[in-house]
Length: 350
Ligand code: NAP
Image 1: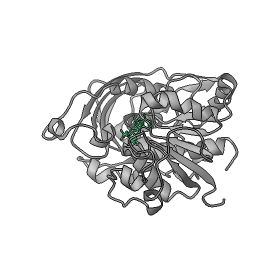
Image 2: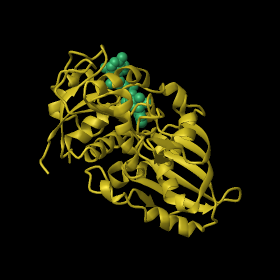
Image 3: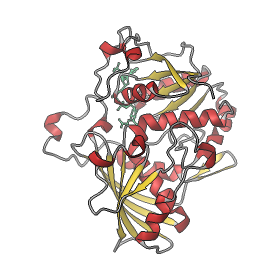
């Protein structure tokens, strides 16, 4: 497999997710960045000047000297990774797909569209087949696929591992880090010494997206999983790492030990297991009574593993546990990269 063989553009490269994409792309074996885009605020300026870099790893020198481009089709690229706000993505992403680019998007605009795959490659890689239907319907020479909302990733992997026991319904309470709100995000005066019990649109996404991800693709459409979810979402003053407390009802009453074994044994499907962003153990199970914790556990699997702990019997449903996801890696930039790799595999290009 050759090195750096696909040319990539990052849309919204100056934002929180865009920065993580630039950082992860610096080390990516297949992808070479050829364009970084932003809004009118940044266009024409060197990325190093336009971007308020917030990662502890330094900005790659090749990125610092690139001039930020307008967010319009026109660059010589094979792939587009989108970290645009949803309302901008809604208008711009179809134009890129129509112009022939493969677009892997973080934005929520098209996640629930019936012909757009909502994918986590280690959960539902078969849903990529929707891209054939998308081409028929939309007539695009390119394609558009999406990754889920960051918090959804913490929920879907454990539920996928428990599906053989018949997941019926779940109650979810999230504690979500500040980076999930992008930059500049929530004002310090609102979040220091505080918790905000409302994140616009988040509960709806958390109640809907897992049903599509865990659904079945048949005859060119996804039939959503028959699964009732009730979510309450909170913004808390951590930097990275969304923690979710779940109570889950299963058709079969299984012990916490059996559930932990099922989750720890969950492996990515063979067709995606060797992709650069795949991790051998998508769910890491901790048995200490006080784990997972965002600061200690968010970088498990390079930020691509979901960490589960506190698995206990639930007096109301069947089991309760806590799950942690690195929201800007597994929940955003790493997710889009993994999707782009899986889409190239699906298209027979790798
Ligand atoms: P952000 O920090 O606010 O960054 C937004 C980016 O979009 C910036 O690069 C900005 O460029 C660009 N942009 C804004 N308006 C634009 C316009 N009119 N035309 C072109 N570019 C424009 O947001 P973020 O947190 O990175 O999130 C990006 C997307 O990923 C959102 O759709 C979000 O919902 C989704 N997402 C975020 C997370 C997370 O954990 N943060 C997780 C999953 C999904 P300038 O800097 O030049 O203005």
